Image (cartoon, rainbow, N blue to C red; front, side, top):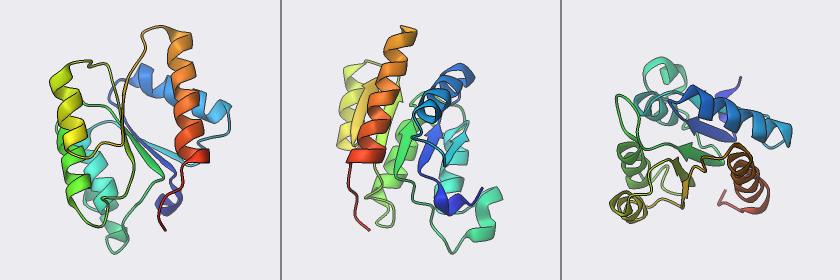
Length: 147
C-alpha cells in the first residue's frame, strides 16, 4: 500500500475492535485505504515517517482521519493526540478518539489537547457497527479538510 494514499489510520490494540471497525468501514466502501497499527508508538512512527516508515521521511502521512484508542501499550492515545496536535504539520489532521473510557477527565483532556471528536465504543455489536458507519460517513464523505 502506498502510505500517502491512506485515508483512515486506525490505532487500536484490541484485535476484535479493530477487525469490527475495518469490516464495517469496508462493507460500506468507506475505507479502501485503511491502515491499522496496534500501538501509539507505531502510530507516531507512521505519521511522522520514523522507524520502519523512515524510508519516506521527507513525506508526512496525513490520513483523512485518525481513529485513536486511548488505552494502548508503549505510547497511549493521549500522548499520540498531544504529539499530533502540537506539531504544525499535522495539527489539522482530524483525530477521533474511539475508546471504552467514559471517564470525564479523559474526555476533558482529549478535547483540551485538540481531539476533533470523542466516541465511547458501544458494547452492543449492532450499536458499535452503527457508530462506525456513522463515523465513517461523516469523516470520510461529509467532512471537508484543508488541502
